[in-house]
Image 1 (cartoon, rainbow, N blue to C red):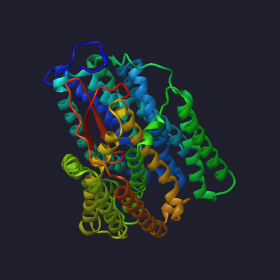
Image 2 (cartoon, rainbow, N blue to C red):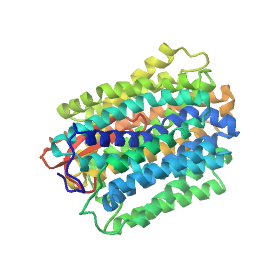
Image 3 (cartoon, rainbow, N blue to C red):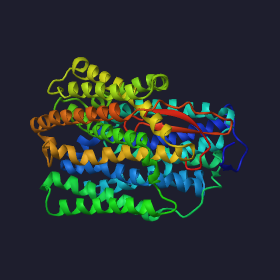
Image 4 (cartoon, helix red, strand yellow):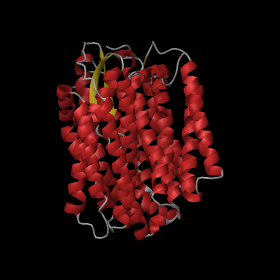
Length: 500
């Protein structure tokens, strides 16, 4: 098996217990994944019911993303050190309690606080879902188990907006409350069927200082940027943003000096790694805003129901689920530079086309066709981008490299959702005024397309190396990367790495 220590013999995929473990990890990852997407569908109803301004809706999204992005690397390390099943269970229970608080929140401030707690639970359970599979299954079945996990998770991501839209039609609180019985089921099955495992080589002190500085820096910067949308970039907003920048600068200093950093800065000395993460930052900044504003635009301006708006982006997940592996194979043959350049260009074209969505939008010409163009660009991009990040790191750092890239993607969306709406004039109760929101939406789509095109330019200039052919020994660890917004997953095989 790999370098993990498991309390039970390796599981076979065809066994009853193996199927239980697979089902449990799919449900666990789906629990966190869906809440990062279906809540977008509920934002309009949440604002109406709780009387929230647009900054309240921004924080409903960002509170979850902030805690998840800040703590997801720590969550993986805690699982390796103290037991993956144990940390996974703590994450599931934490997520369920936070979901209950979200569903019962009487005002927007308590909802935002509960969403932040949800993100903490997500950061604990998300890394553990795949790590449990990697540590529990026999080497001969591990790749197939991860492939099944990937496919089933993709299906969950596809139906999520539909289920979310249907629940919002009944009551937006059900989007959160439905998590509680699912979490109870996960806990029961995990305790009965999932073996414990940990990494015996995980040692050294946990980087608590780095974790706290990252969380404080991202939180203060996001708070300042969001506040600037309401009151202008002065006073408390400017001071808070400056404090956030100072914390992030201190984080870099600490990571450079500590013996066991949360983020090994030497990875960024590789120009391919730095370039791929720069592309990630630009692309996922655009995606973060698109996935929030498009669903609101369809409901507020076009008059669609939450169910109809939630299903509008379903083609993105379907196209990526069907063709991402082919895009990865293409990048392996011709190198990642062309797919990573052409992908954002196509996506930008789809975004500009989606910017034309307005009152009385028709599904096929105004929504379906541009969404399909957008999806084709993302499909070309995501797998080669992930592969480039992994290829730029040595095998010893493959896991932490993918974790850094995932955190960069979530941080990009977090900051963009804080900045872009204010930059295009959407603030306060503007989302209740269809004309004002429509004007801001159109400008935002142009800005998002520019971010995508800038990402394409960076890829064209700096992505040079062809992808290396990685060995696949019997004793290997399976790595998986999940698109932070559509939930579609892709796999790579690497030698065992306790940082995974």
